[in-house]
Image 1: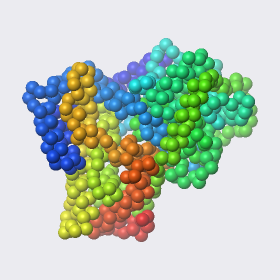
Image 2: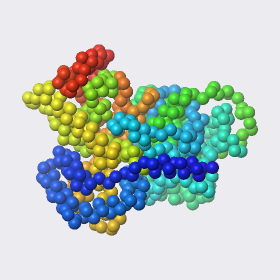
Image 3: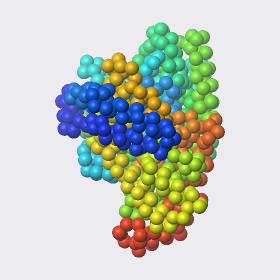
Image 4: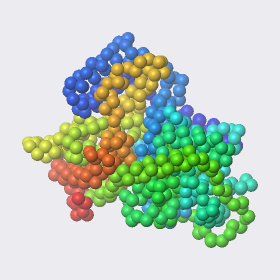
Length: 623
């Protein structure tokens, strides 16, 4: 039944162009330009010498570039495997906070089990409409492959590297069950019985049975889900012990092959602020709340809290944030299912099955260690979800500026105001215009952004407002130009990664350009950012990617912007509250500058600009 559908998917992917390999000199010139203002002058000159040697005629750079071009000819996407391993599978950090983002729904009594199943059916049948690019270069069709990994993938832990497993077999049957987590126990809920998909009433009945089964103290088993919250190597070692017992193997198999998880959470006992709900989604509140009521290896975990704290936690390796947004917006937009009658099902259904575990003393010790580490992670996360109400993307658009570029410059401004220096910055850029396209990096810490923030923060500066405005325009233009390069496959990060990995495949000694201190600094993303816009009331959040860094996710709406800023408490350098306070000040100063200079900025309707800005001020800017 699926063969024609899979063929259709292959056809749609092949209809897209292949990801290009940028010219070597272009990438190296851009690399030097990106790093010149981020490292000391002496170090930069040393990097320039190393780079010149690398790209010399007949040198190592030319060889690696030639091999990369050959790889492009035989691969649908020459960087995909390299990128997946480097970004996710080789990363040994625990998934919660460090890797897995969450989408937080409005506080509600959410009943989306049957809706999630309906979305999976659409995905399975490839009935999803094709996405088209928005924003820069809008209208281009995008690769849809990520959608079909939402419910068919699993991240298997390994001692050195993980494996992204996909259910692609034409021999094995498609999965027909979900796993329900309740009170740290796991239950198999078959969604197809006797070739019939369960209806809403059936699903409700089965979930009620699971809640009752989970109450039984006599049947209570150890909270095995905690193991998936540990570092990847530690979890791989614990899993290798678990699979020695056939009962555990069977339980693991059911989880690894399920469509998704539905986590029925207990009330967390906290005020349901945006910040607290974000943290509950990211880590469940730790070992004493819902931290064990998860299985982090599974890409889709729908969390339904008894206190109305609801959302989705996703294992990030199979798909990007925008795919998660499209899925969750679908669920929210179709509304609540028809009213569920609190009565027994019209059909006799077999009871859901509790997954059994045989826990040796060794596994018990692993559980204790995993619980303690998760608790430390919970206590270390410093999160601030802030709704900036001064203005939104409509005001920015009336300045004839890209909202994303504007916000990125504001983030650079805020970081500089807090720390007095620029740092390597990551902003994800979709490359789904190409076959199997995932993302590349927009390097937002541009020299132009630095010039602007210095002009705004230097109290001794003699620059006029008009000159500062010109620097803002330069920063916006530089950010926009790099964005276009990134989404058209011409950014530097994937290319440099490809050259590095080709050298490894050829068993060459790591080229000096990749052992150079500048390259190491270039990949320490102290500011990791992402725009995740939505059309319904929800927001995305994640943790920092380095110990002394910030995660900054933002959702620009017409009249406001939601920021989710995270950092770690044990870093003496960072503070999410400090960053948000600075960000609000910077957004205000940028708005004031636009209001003052609207006739000098760029040709457009200055009266309309002034009126819009005045309205934003009257509406009240949070400070």
